[in-house]
Length: 306
Image (cartoon, rainbow, N blue to C red; front, side):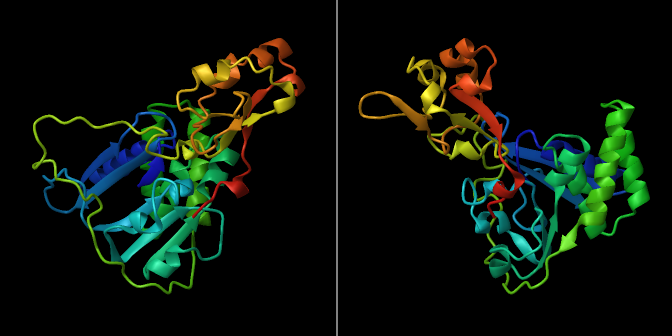
């Protein structure tokens, strides 16, 4: 599962693992991530078998890849990174509204499916949490028993959420199952297999290790929350400099005279600290027309980058 923190990939993989155990299989679920920050890139793995599992290292070859967040492409990941280790007879499932082919079809000759999971999530639970709709699509692709998996899902989320939220999620599950589409016209061949993780296995790691968290120094953190962006209205800015002081990612852009002129959208991860600290915004007292910095939603049509 390739996702961003906050989209429910860890929960989805954990649920899927528990459901497989309920069906009599052996199953594991384990994540891999750097910065523990909403919007940061996340990988999650499922390993499922009819035999006892004792290997918790990242898989080297995989039967299926789920791209839960298309904005990862050409930001943190390349198309080949997503397909790394995917077997020729496997499949790729993408959270996307598009019905046409993408560059993935040039690289991979296996089955590719699209499901509008973000659209479904926003229309059902009113949040960009596309995991449940994606589970519905996955159940359809794998030809699992829908009624049984739906019952597992209801029991799982009922332990956490009230009945009203549970019912909305079940609607999202049903829609994901019904709306997943195979995108015809695959022309590619199997790419050269390489490990899903090219690092050492857990058995080869030293007893202690330090992992550096991701920031705008290493990533285009502006993609961490693709559904939002910070807008700068220059005519309202009073050049107090507070936004620059509070920004954790050096995303405030200045001219040669030190005047703020905009926001580096590749570095800005939409934390909103500048919006809250802005002196002009406080003077505006809630009047958006007088605010210098404000958060705005990005249309879904602009969020898919694969």
